[in-house]
Amino acid sequence: MEAFTYKRAEDIPQAIEAAAKSKTAQQGAQVRFIAGGTTLLDLMKLDVERPRQLVDINHLPLSKVEALPEGGLKIGALVRNADLAHHPLVQSNYAVLSQALLSGASAQLRNMATTGGNLLQRTRCMYFRNDALPCNKREPGSGCAAIDGDNRMLAILGTSRNCIATNPSDMNVALTALEAKVRIEGVGGSRVVGIHDFFLEPGDTPQRETVLEPGDLVTHVSLPPARSNSTQVYLKLRDRASYEFALASAAVVVETQGGKFSYVRVALGGVGTRPWRSLEAEKALQGEPVHEKTFAEAAEAALRGAKPQSGNAFKMELARRCVVHALTLATKSA
Ligand SMILES: Cc1cc2nc3c(=O)[nH]c(=O)nc-3n(C[C@H](O)[C@H](O)[C@H](O)COP(=O)(O)OP(=O)(O)OC[C@H]3O[C@@H](n4cnc5c(N)ncnc54)[C@H](O)[C@@H]3O)c2cc1C
Ligand code: SF4
Image (cartoon, rainbow, N blue to C red; front, top):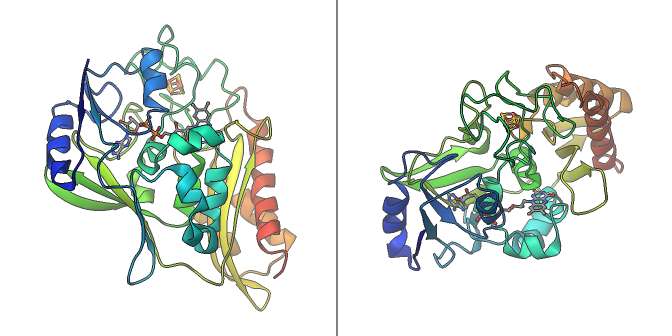
């Protein structure tokens, strides 16, 4: 195994060129960027990822959180999860992001994990992490052991007959409710992709999780100008109070006027094959009275297209309650 380290802004094209030697930027890539390593090294130890080359990006100048002149925030891909969660501008203007980050993993992991790595962390489906068992995401065409197996933790929204794995990131759910954008540098130049378009549903190609191409380096995530009148809540329901992935979570950003919702964004975690923005829930809330009946209708709308698996039907009610409770918390002073 070879490892290369790049340190200066001028080195970014070289890092991209090195990674572009892979046929894919996704599962099975021969060349991989390494940031905090908390996902990648785990998967290499399990033999699930077997890159021939690692491109160490830790020293590239991508570790700043910057306020944008027109409002909004530019977050470098190497900003550590702990630093981002405790950044004063994140705490004051994007509280849902801070809450989501602090609900994830452990203090030690958050000190290592980066914004880019968290964005691209892999599913925790146990069959994906065991290379003795069939898994279409790990080995396309081999089958999906989870559909008739242990799928208690897995998805009920956005699933396909090929894969029902959940996107496990808490941060991604908050970024979805905040309508973040991802800046990518690649062999063909740079581009910006809205978070909603960045992640792909599994369909017939579960091995492909994002729009990234070989060589693509995530350099920043940006947030739109803060909504200073909004209330933001991230609620995570899980088997134990810390160091555990979500069974269901909800990120809500709301504004109210005269007892009605004037602005609403709702995203769900722990239930979708990708971070799940619920336009249906938002539609059910927008312009409607702040009332528990409205919350229940929104929660119902959010889960309408869900397809429970053999072991996770309980997530239907859990996710509904999660949405209702997050909205209740976000509007308690409305
Ligand atoms: C025990 C445990 C518990 C956890 N619990 C939670 C939890 O509750 N909630 C939660 O959200 N997460 C949880 N996590 C996951 C953790 O948040 C991720 O492992 C972490 O965020 C990954 O960041 P990293 O920088 O270490 O990524 P790495 O492991 O370095 O990289 C991850 C992937 O992203 C790619 N990559 C990294 N940076 C870039 C970039 N800039 N451009 C392109 N590709 C890039 C790498 O090639 C790799 O494929 C847990 C992890 C562990 C081990
Ligand atoms: S759900 Fe997806 S990740 Fe899990 S075994 Fe099936 S194909 Fe693999």
